Length: 446
Image (cartoon, rainbow, N blue to C red; front, side):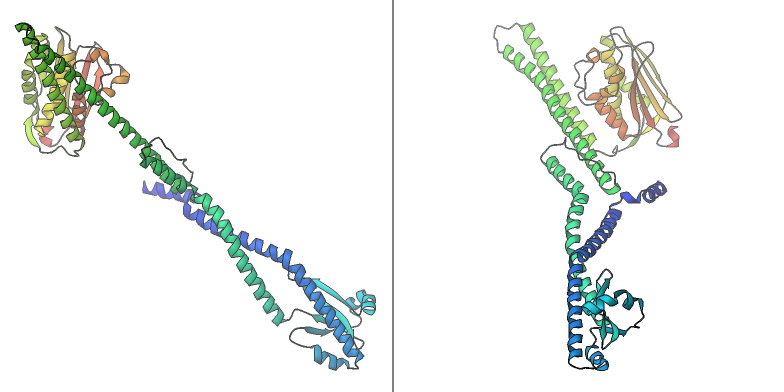
């Protein structure tokens, strides 16, 4: 699993936030530098060209004035030869002179320019000798380069800041969306969802958030259903108790009716007590992560005792019991396992018709201890098999009785804590079979 994740990360490096930030920084620098150079070329290059040409024109005029004042070639060169200019002698037969000789004679000089940063070269004559004067000396170039670097740096900072602001906003937009969605969840809106980006970091964060919101929505729905169901389950017997208690206030009520109403009140009170007990037990078990205190006991003997305890119920319906229990000792919580068998067997008795049949079988298998408790009552639709283990579920009216829908939820939770599994299946010949499989705790149980 680890190697798979690593290969996945190497396969899709472009989706990582780290790569995006590095790429963003690189692109911002490239774009900023490109824009800076473009600004220099478009704005400063013409200005520097004009300035250099004016300087060279003034320079040529100064040479002519020195010639008119009677200075020799050597004197003029020594005067104008400074660190600001570079002066080179030219051969009278050089191509530069031949091509522009007419212009030099009429104008006194001619200038050429080249390079990204304008380099103006002046060609003129001093006392009949042609010279080339270049405005780009090492000193001038030093100051020009420094000026260009400073301007480019300032422009890069300004443009880079602007671009980073826009690009960073795009990259951080998923976090802003997640922050808004989190605020909605905090206010109780669990239906909110965020878009899941393709990159690893934001995508995983968004998926986990959506999963959390979905789970919270489910929990909120279950909580609402639980409160609604509990209220309904309490309301029905309370209404019955209240109604019959009012009838008992009638002084003309016969002894037989009074006894009947009293018995109904007792039954409804017992129902409320059982409901409260089941809710407390289920709430306690849902908060448990372990089975609790364990002991070694006989499962087959425990099931026999529960069958005998429920004898009034199955005898009243004249149910034919087929019991086949293998001698098995189990290490677990004896009280909780007793609730499992009691709820399942009592459930089977309720749905077994008059003069019906029930089978209770306990045996060892290769994977664990298996108990099968079946009846020949109505079948359960396939889409309802998993739901019958949910709290308060009584969706199938053919198998709805005076129960409160908590017994099988208790069974499911206890078996889960034991590391086992419970499931229900419809029998081919008719009826329903509840299956409980418990894992072996020790070799002695196998």
